[in-house]
Image (cartoon, rainbow, N blue to C red; front, side, top):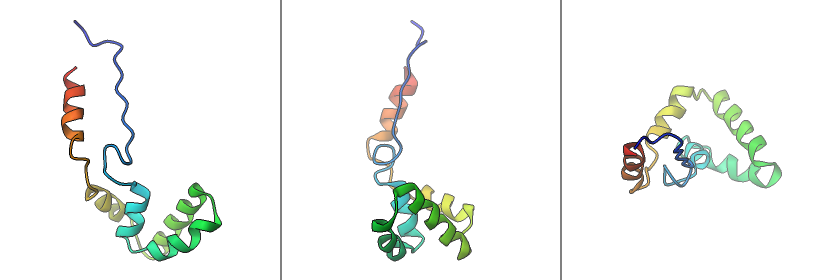
Length: 88
């Protein structure tokens, strides 16, 4: 039987990786203090835009962010779940 019409959807944060990717990047790149100061003052997307601008102004490159994300903790059961879904 063909698997036509089957769609599997995963959320990234706290599903595929066992954390929030925004917080992970900010923490790993050493910007937690600024993040915590700004958090009560602006909406999330504006805050993350500002954090990326701040990190960029300090010399952070997209490769640095990618490297941090590659170190993010993968949820212990997600690899098998993805493999099972792919096998369908």
